[in-house]
Amino acid sequence: MVASVLKTQSFIIFLILFFITIISSFSRLTIAYGYSKLFGKYISPSSLGLKREKLSHLHFYLHDVLSGKNVTAIRVVDGKPSTNSSSQFIFGDVYVIDDPLTIEPDINSKTVGKAQGTYTVASQGELSLLMVTNFAFTEGKYNGSTLSVLGRNEVLSAVREIPIVGGSGVFRFARGYAQVRTQSINQARAIVEYNVFVFHYR
Image 1 (cartoon, rainbow, N blue to C red):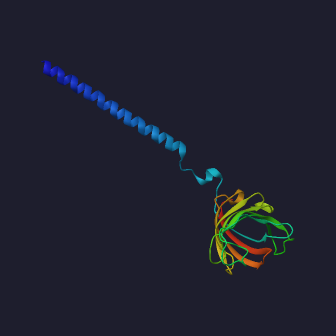
Image 2 (image 1 turned 90 degrees about the vertical axis):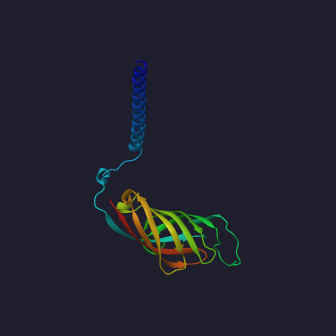
Image 3 (image 1 turned 90 degrees about the horizontal axis):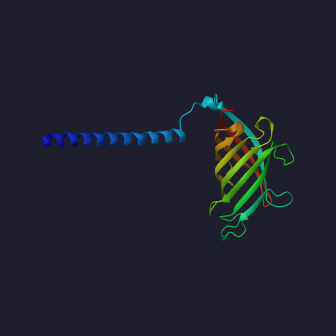
């Protein structure tokens, strides 16, 4: 009789502990799932007003003025001196820019925006820059919108491509590339042609 009672009590205790374990595990899963729902979830593009993706082509000229009046590029970090002492650009140099973007190669032609950011001399051989720059537009339907550029710019190559990695305003969710050609370059300034091809939604 005593043995039977003890067995019954042991079984009841086992059931209680079992259900406590199940409930505790379920609660932890619920809490974890609840936090994950708050942190991130899938949404419809239409909920942000996104419709059909568009492809736009922008064409402009960038003016990088290193000396003289109205300088737009300033060296803020001096790089490592090299044996090529005649070069104005040294490996490790970092420049901050606020370069005008114009509709024609003439710097006095209509301004459509600014290139604002930095470039770093990132090669010990050829003149190659790491571009970290925003194109901030001020003209027409693009006024107030930006495109973000991040990539390698081998300055002395005839044609090079630099990725477009994002944007704002009209260019939200932007992706694409800039095709870049140097129009002229000397110790004082550079004029660079940009053909930008970018996918965006707005």
